[in-house]
Length: 166
Image 1: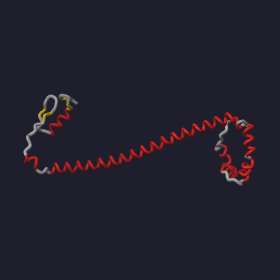
Image 2: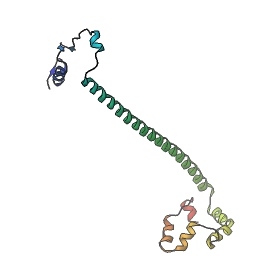
Image 3: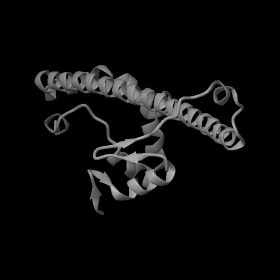
């Protein structure tokens, strides 16, 4: 593309076709303007101007509709982002509390303390074992087979390995 006086040649041609009355100077186009008369100002616009105005009005409505849809979408996305951030903060707090509890158990819990806790809860544990108190894990255990095997991988425990060995 060749450049003419810093202006793209294709643009120059398009501009010249759109405004044949324009005069090209070194840096820019100068449009000759006639002094408007009162008759020209008061004359009704021709059909092509009305058609362009109608098309521009239609495009304005379409742009407004698209903007409204986009604004609603972005508002929903902002709401989701805020909910996710809230959940992340809550999760971090939960993790911190769980870490403190785990550290406390690792520090204060011994094998003898675990045995004592089981002795204190023996009646409750026997009721669960006999089915007097409902426990999902007991139900899975009673089904046997694959259900019982899955309990090994579903084991939820707050204890460290040294506590389980006791």
